[in-house]
Amino acid sequence: MIDRLEAIQKEAHEAVQTAGDLKTLEDLRVKYLGKSGLVTEILKGLGQVPAETRPQVGKACNEMKNKITLQLDLKREELEGKGSVVTPREWDPTLPGRVTPLGKTHPLTAVQKEICDIFKGFGFDLAEGPDVESDYYNFLALNFPPDHPARDAQDTFYLGRDVLMRTHTSPIQIHVMEKFKPPHKFVAPGRVYRHEAIDATHHHLFHQVEGFLVDEGIHFGHLKGILDSFIKKFFGPRIKTRFRPSFFPFTEPSAEMDISCVFCEGKGCRICKQSGWVEMMGCGMIDPAVFKNCGIDSEKWTGFAFGMGVERVAMFKYDVDDIRLFYQNDLRFLKQF
Ligand code: PHE
Image 1: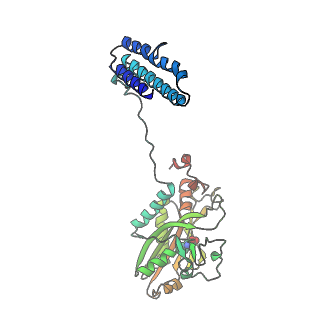
Image 2 (image 1 turned 45 degrees about the vertical axis):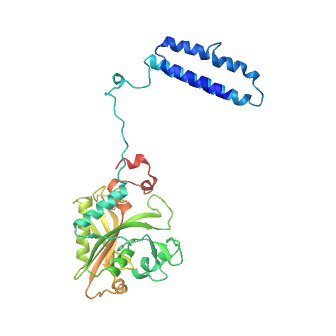
Image 3 (image 1 turned 180 degrees about the horizontal axis):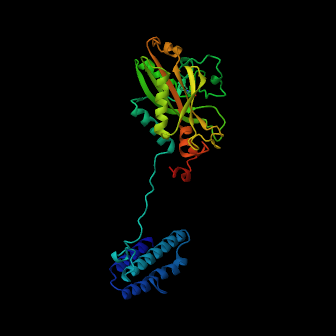
């Protein structure tokens, strides 16, 4: 029975393919699917088929009917000239093309690069270090005493007793001093991690650019000059800088650098809380204790270091008031840069 069905189907397929006009095609439809057509007759006679093979034969019959119907339909479309192939006349060259969406650099990546490029222009090299650090590089070598609060698990993500996610990019100073002899002059961008509650100005992951310069005869005036030039290149020549005394274990003296508010140019506004100044970064002269940890003679060499938060710089550059926006990857936000 199944063999017979296959033979009919093959015969029907060949006949349909060679049909040259609609009349022949209609005759074929009647021959196979008409009231007393071949396929119809077989379907009618299904009752005589032994019960065990009936479901199988019935299924094959229906498939055959569907196939022949489809072939007839396709052939009819072809003969009627309604094929699915687009003829040249139907192609409209005035329709707008399809736009391929293009990605672009994330604002944080762009700002980080802009910062580093300015320092490269001042002759600084680029350095980097690992995100996972030991207590030694992140704290001890940088002159943090063993009981310093920053070492508290409240502020630091520990992976083991002595292994942690770096809380700042300053450990890169130590790696570079261990590997190379002075003089040094580099900037080092990277991710840093702090065990902090997230809000509009804090995130547990953010980015810093570290700066480091060691040579003979380097003094605080060099630090001020370089950072002031950087700010004027980045934010524009009208922005002023000022340095306030501060404290970091690895710099002495240490300072906090403020810049005149980029929004009100020092007149006082909501962003600078009417003070005219905003805090920009920590900096200072390298503490002789840090030189000693790296076997460098602090009588001969002096230098300065600074560290700035990329998010903070980007928030001032683009007037973004919530750090979380940089991490939500909402295209409506990202498209603006
Ligand atoms: N590492 C400091 C911080 O994360 C910033 C800093 C870097 C300060 C270099 C002074 C010198 O807060």
